[in-house]
Length: 258
Image (tube, rainbow, N blue to C red; front, side, top):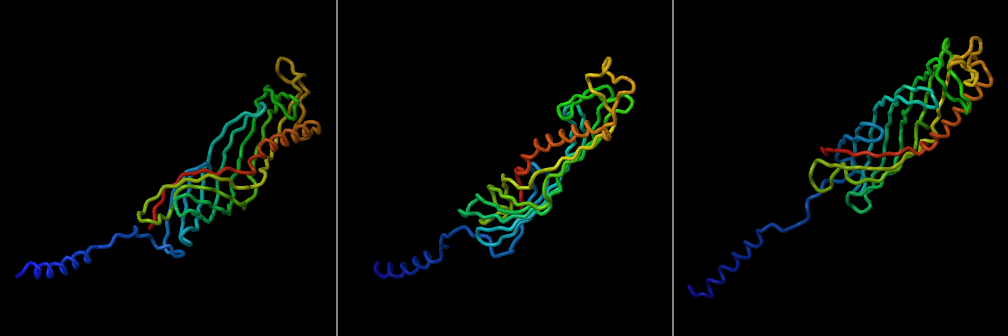
C-alpha cells in the first residue's frame, strides 16, 4: 500500500479518536428550582445556639428560617442593690437570602417571628447595707431587709431584621457541607424594665453605727417619697437599656445540604 493510501485511512481514525474525547465544560450546578432541595445548619451566636433550614427560590435566592435559644445566669450589683437572675434567649426567625453577585456574599432582609428574649431576676439588699434610689441614699432595715424583682421584656414579639453574611447553606457548585457567618440587627423597639421592691429603709444620713435607729425604718411600697425615687431609678435604668431597641445579630453556622 502506498504512503498516500495509508495516510487517508489513518485520518478518519484520528478524527474519531478526537471526537470521542469529552468536551471540557463548567462544573455541574445543583438544581435551583424553587423548593428543589433542603439544607440544615447549626449556628452559635449572640442569642445562643440554634438551627436554620433553607431551600432555594431561584439561582440567587434562598428562603431560610430557624430558631435560637439559650439561658445565661447573671449576678450584678446596681447602685448597691444585688441582682441575681437569668437572661432567657428565645427567638424564631425567617429571611430571604439574596446573593447579588452569585457568590458567597449575601444580603438577608427578614423578620423575627417570635421574640421571647427576657430577663427575670430577684433583688436583695442585706440589712444595714446602703443603696441608692433616684440619687437618694438609703440603708436597708435589719428587721425588714429590702428585696424584690427585676424583669425586662426585650421589645416587640415580632420585629424586622436585616443582616449581611458570607456563605450559602445551599452550595450551588457541588458539595454538601457549608460554613457561613452573618452580622446585622433586628429592630425590636425599646425594652421595658420593671422593678418592684419591698421591705423597709431609713435615710443613710440618719443611721447610727451603720444601722437604722429603732422606729425609723419606712416601708418602701407605702412611703410616697421612696416610691417616687424608686420610679426615678426605674426610669433611669430604662433609659440606659433603650439602646437595645436595635438588637445586634452575629452568628457562625455549619450546614449540610441533602
